[in-house]
Length: 302
Image (cartoon, rainbow, N blue to C red; front, side):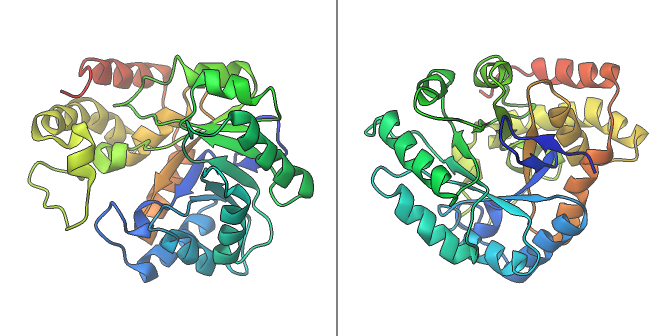
């Protein structure tokens, strides 16, 4: 199984990381814990060695589910969150919910405009020096913010949003991190399910599913355009490789220069195994160029 180093840290991870936002339930219209645990175990069985979780994913519920699933077979877990005066408290709470005594990579979930980055980095480097965490990461930080963080300590990873439909960070923070040996772990790499081709125009969403309201690509006119590109360009390539659309989207993403890993969520074991299969899919440069050109033709969501 191929592994990729996370920046200048000692951590090595698979190109596909299991994301656990959806299994927390909140935002995604609920979740089934038993199927979520099956998904986590299936991902680990398929070779994925890294799990991303956070207290905001179901307000702690995702961490509890992950903790139950990895008990006795833990490799390492990616965690991400930032609160002004409670970084240490949040870390302790996550350790308890996960049932572990060490977090390998601890990432700030969102920038906090009310907190100086020097204060944030002081807290993080303190946890690093104590051995409570193994590496420091940031999520949704700009290149300028990361540059300021580096004045106070190491930054091993950055986690921006990136997919074939949302590529604005490629020439910004992703390029900056590539230049400075900081790993880029991208999230929403399947655009919250759209790039799987399974989110159709007649899709009915469960109560509590916020994707149609929050993500403009879920608007019917935008979704129709995205599905057309998937059918006309991505599907023939998927068929050629006996792969799924999700695997094509993930394989394209992890082959992009500057991107270290891609988060891929799964609600059940079948989806987890499907996502892991993307690590074995190699697209040609011509295929990658055809896919990119097709999605570039869409422009931005209207």
